[in-house]
Image (cartoon, rainbow, N blue to C red):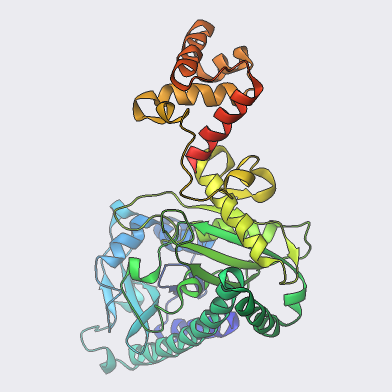
Amino acid sequence: MRGDYQQLVDEISAALGAPATLEDRDFGLIAFGAHDGDDDVELTMDPVRTRSILQRRSTAAVRAWFEAFGIARAQAPLRIPPDPAAGVFKGRICLPVRHRGVVLGYVWLLDDEHLAGLDLAVPLADPRLAQAMETAARIGALLAAEARAGAELGELLRELLTGRPAGREAARAALREALGPAGDGPLAVVAVAPWRTAGETDGETGDAGDAEGTAAGSALAGQSGVAALCAVPDALPDGSAALAALIRLRATTSPAPAHTAADRLLRSPRAGGAPGRPVRATAGLGTPRRGLAELPAAWREALAAARAAGAEARLGPVAEWSGIGPYRVLSALPAHAAADPSIRPLLAPAHTELARTAEVFLDCAGQAGRTAAALGIHRQTLYYRLSRVEQLTGLDLDDGEGRLLLHMALKADRL
């Protein structure tokens, strides 16, 4: 299917005599036409197009500039002026890629001397533009078909990962049939959390709204081994959704494709908290499995790893289940589990510095010298703070069980 998109983009490039670039509605690169000019000029004069091709995604500033012109609602070609402040040094012509009234992507063309004569006010009057728009409609139909197929796979994946036992078995059989031999091969589950669903981003419904994962991952398909994607509502303790991605691997000992997919999904506009709730998105990888039978366990591992990466910056932005240490146990605790009464006073906002000191001290195995160096404080300051921690909690930090209780409670609070 990737080749179909390339062929259609080449048709638009040929019809208009200018290089075209196709992106999905989340600005993920799908295909681009060849450029006949000097490559050095291209790099100098149009860094946005170069970045899109090399990094396969536009920056947030570029997206905001283009979206300000209503491209997500456009029904006809738009001419967008340059904005050097956003890094857009050349104007663009945007051909919205629509299907059944929903924008699924965009075809971009540099608005240079080749296209200066195009009259966008009456697009069908110019046979070149009319042909390009007809091709864009064919791209829209192809994207919609891919979205529907992806949504079906996503529904099966969601049922397999989170459904009841009877539903899981039926979903596993259907997903195995859909994936063919890949369903028996090495697979990994990636979790991206939090994840904004379609309704939290653009409010659209229909074909676009039914393919949350597919829209986000269309630029990944065929490149990072993505077999299926789905949004999982209420996956996090605060009720936020997470994205589940099923990744094909060459071997269970080689999770590189899963890391690549996680990195790219984290660059999606949907990765992160809902509007008005800025939360950094993180990703987790479950232990790779062979076949589909153990994927529910792999999903729990992946989600725990994503939560751990969000709690500990040193683990992220992509963490593997095997590397999250005590969070493997802590993430399994009920979300409503309250902190031990002895620890609660230390968790008050007024004692943030003391809590951090205690955690670093315990992370350093109780070695005062390492702790003082890590915190950048004098040993006497450290001893004073630790005595305050003992006073607040009633715990003896010379006692192993007291240290264990405090350490686990502080780590659990991060989740």
